[in-house]
Image 1: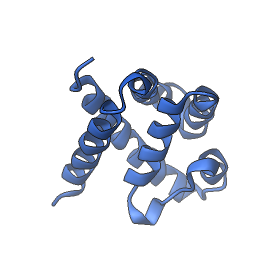
Image 2: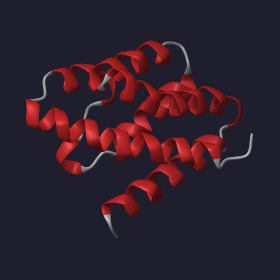
Image 3: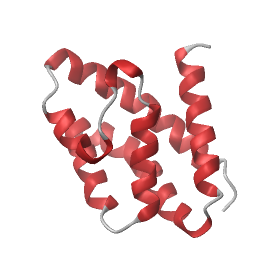
Image 4: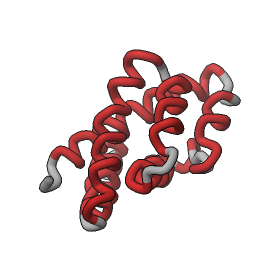
Length: 118
């Protein structure tokens, strides 16, 4: 399986599981739709800071953050509760790689949530 196929498979599988939880899926969908925009506009750390702000008190958004961390490749695994600190401590090369990978994942998650029934 190619890397992009794995990203797509993971995103669709995790989004489908989240949509089965019902009312929490609205926050999940909002977080997934917003992340790519914030990544392009502000960069990785700022986008993750926004995600951390959104997560507060929203179980659906918390699940999205956990799913995002679970879908990261092994060489970029990040702790769910410390995602922002993890990104801030990356070296320049790792930061560029993590930014690219996060953007690709975020786009697949956005596609996945848009494909789920409302």
